[in-house]
Image 1 (cartoon, helix red, strand yellow):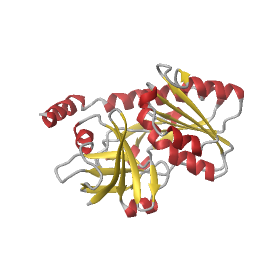
Image 2 (tube, protein in one colour):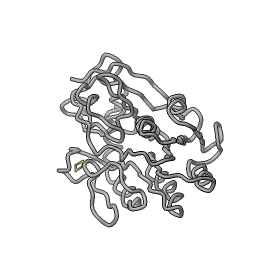
Image 3 (cartoon, rainbow, N blue to C red):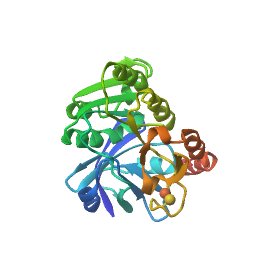
Image 4 (spheres, helix red, strand yellow):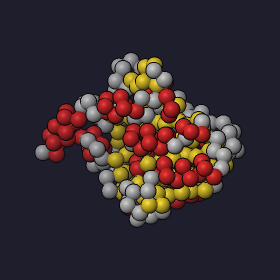
Length: 270
Ligand code: FES
């Protein structure tokens, strides 16, 4: 059993849990994830490792279905049946020069660890975090502390730049040399934002979030097309070259179980 050391609600439907998982904490690197199962009959869900502190790892999730709704009913002192990880390949951290780390919505959860490792590797790190509105913006203080500069965007203009991360990125790219870009967020946001770096030929990584089951490359549920080849996000990713990803296929496959997910959530709510 894996104990939840601390549980905090960060925003509407967004929760932060610190889970005691020494083996995971010891080996985890930026860009990797865990798969957890609440109990024996539970579904397995992948969550990015957002931070590491001693024997604990932090995950941040939004309630979007039955399992995340059930997870949100737990609190500090409760336990989770299974935590497997760290899974996936770590981010390709190196000393590139100037790097931009972009998070959208709950995807911001992935940014601190990547930004931190890039900073330690000697890069000048620019953070861009965006949300629909100010009350949904998470980890601002933490990112401000890690990054050399931080830009904020909101869709409704309630904080920072009124607009999208892609708008800020386009402006930065026009003004100065950026050597690497990471983008983590909803598929459509990653697709649009990654489009900004194409004319500049800047290597851009996205962290893909397809449906996952086993997390070990066996079931095939997380398959994505990158550069015309089939890849498994759980073992070949989750980070891939953004300019090679077939985002339309990813978004279509993410919707496959929408009907079943809705029915399952309704049963849980009864
Ligand atoms: Fe099964 Fe990736 S989750 S192959």
